[in-house]
Amino acid sequence: MQDLDFRRKRKRSNNRKPAKPRRTRRTSSRGGLRFEDGKAPLHFAQEKLRRSRVGAKDIVIWAVELLLVCMLAVFLVAAFGQRVSTAGDSMSPALKNGDVLLINRAVYHIKSPARGDIVAFRKEENGHFSVKRIVGLPGETVQITDGKVLINGEELTNHIYASDIEYAGEAEQPVELGKDEYFVIGDNHTASDDSRLPSIGAVTRDEIYGEAWFIVSPGEDFGFIG
Image 1: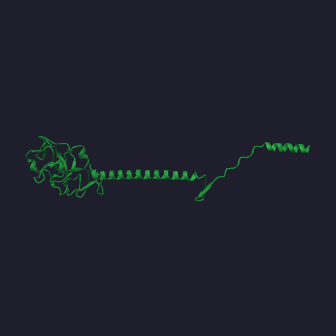
Image 2: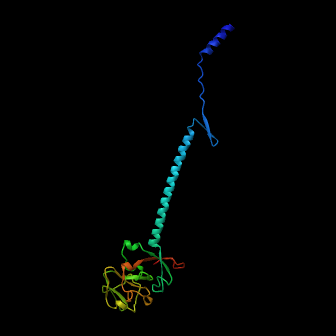
Image 3: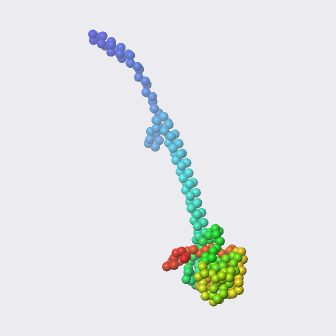
């Protein structure tokens, strides 16, 4: 019986399927890490290349954004940040002697100068800037009679801060303004050299530098020009 059992066990063992031989894995190590079959190093190389491309793209985007910001800053300074200093009290009480003003140069590329605007202008290319208020517009006739400013024969009551004008100058007789000429007067007319003087006269559009809009001088007057 024991011999029979031994034969059965032997038969069963002969019916077992032979075990598959184990595959040998080739391994390589880089930087202390182990990779199988040589595939992992290629994967990491592709990942590194992808990251380098993304990094280069980010740098280009950052450079473009920086360039746009710089261009915008230059435009804002050129359009709204040009500085002009007032000399004298010809625009008192709105402006005082020595006030530093920001000039809006862009506004008159959008619209024409209007009555009541405080503008900076100069009659000569290398001359100093003057700051006055616009009273007469192109095509109008300006005259000063009995201390009052007349526009086309009618008294100007709006956008005029000078009153009881004693010196009429050139405007003692009607002054006809050309298609691009403006008549300017300082609010403090007794201390103002403006369009009433023959040496200044009417101001052309090309001579107007821009509109004064902000006082940057430190102190109580700092802020927008009223």
